[in-house]
Image 1: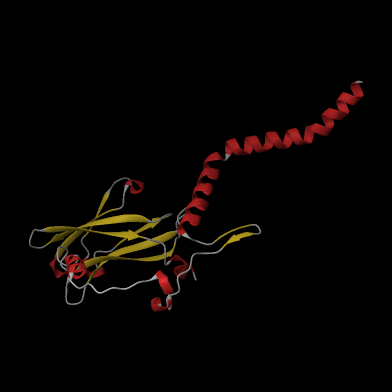
Image 2: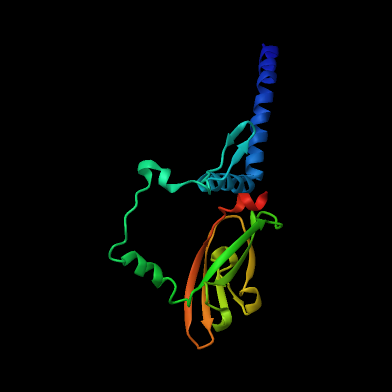
Length: 197
C-alpha cells in the first residue's frame, strides 16, 4: 500500500513543482509582468502591430494616398455657408500669434522608453519667433510635474524627452511685450512606424 501512495506522489510531484515554480515566478516578476501587460494593452489600443509567438496583429493603417472622395457613404461634404467653421479655425491663429507646437520622433535610446521626442515651435507663414522670450513646457506627472523652460530661440525653443506612451504637452509662451499664451499638442506616436524604418 505504501508503494502505491509513493508512486502516486511521484506522478503528481512534477505537476506540483511546476505549479510552485509558476507561482514563485509570478510573485517575483509581478511588476515586470504588469508593465509588459500594460504595454501590450497600450499597443493594441494604439493600433500598433503586435506579434507574440505565432499570433500576429497587424497595425492600423491609413493610406496617405487614399482619395477621400472614393470613400462612398463614409465621407460626406458640405459647404461652410455662414463661415462659422472658418471663424473658429482662424481663432486658433490669433492668441498664439500664429506660432504652433510640433514634434519629431526617433526610436528611443533610453531603457523602457519607446521614442525620443523633440518638441519645438514653428511660426506659420509670415509669423516669427522674434516676439517670443521663453517657453515653459509641462508634460505631466510622469515627469515629476516639473515645468521645463527653454530660452533657445535659434532651435525653435526646442526641448527633448523620452516616453513610453503618447501624452499631452502644454507650452506657455512668454512674449517680449509681457503677454502670454498657452498652446498644447498631443504628442502622438502615429509616425513612429516611419521613424523606426
